Amino acid sequence: MIVEHLSGVTFGSVVTGVNLEELDEQTWYELHDLWVDRALLIFPEAWITPEGQDNFARRFGDLEFPRTAISNIGKEGILHHENNDDVVKVLRGNEGWHHDSTYMPTQAKGAVFSAEVVTESGGATGWADMRAAFDALEEGIRSRVSAMNAYHSYYYSQGRDGYLPNEQNDDGTYNYYGFHDHAVSLRPLVKSHPDTGRDNLIIGRHAHNIVGMDPAESEKFLDELNVFACQGSRVYHHDWSPGDVVVWDNRRLMHQATPYDMTEPRRMWHTRIAGDPLTETAINHL
Ligand SMILES: [Fe+2]
View 1 (cartoon, rainbow, N blue to C red):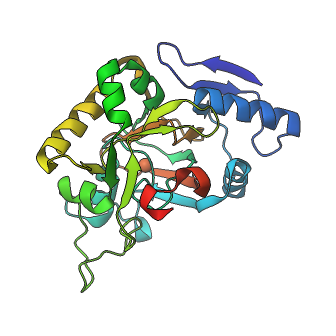
View 2: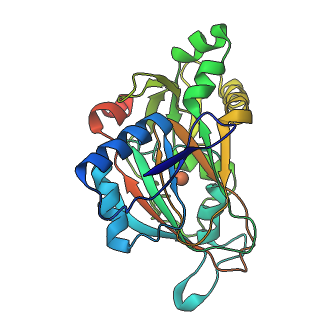
């Protein structure tokens, strides 16, 4: 196993010389320790099989959902590319910085993500280190945010960005993942990582309405916090080659999609690792 840390950023490593589908226990423990330490592992052109991807993800924990296409390729190869298309709205929504599934009762632990078909240009995926962001806050703000809780909702994030689906049920709900009818998840802005004990900001596009704060003031505060958090040495963008595989820690990192020409086909595969209910459940779902 050859490990090369990303340069100029506070997290992330490129790992080669390892077969993700035939890990012996010793290598798995080394890889897991590295993941906890670096939060993002990139395996260039590892070409993991469909079953291999889910099996690899299961080593980290139960699955929130198995390998799922994140793609503009529709039925019979038709490409979703119009702004008003519901598939496009989901994909474009992903361009805002976020942790996965903070709008669910239990937020995700992480994800295994692989590239099958990529476009000529664009479509990089970015990650941002919310542990380093917390550490970089001025002490006064750090103690303020440590006492704050905010709601996380996919209705909020997609609605604010103009990406709510066209297809709506009679009761005003939607059938896409994340538009659930549980109570809106309430989460602390700062959360201790269960494996490292270090504090991390839990923010991003789904977070809104800090408890006890005027809604407009809360929106401004969170916007500024997101901008501060996602910059400089805390951000890395990966340009994909077909076959690349990554695994990230959703408890520490936010991520974002970036635009690409949607008249070109692109297909990525996402396996979502479920968060441990003991540590990743929203305050109001405990
Ligand atoms: Fe995501």
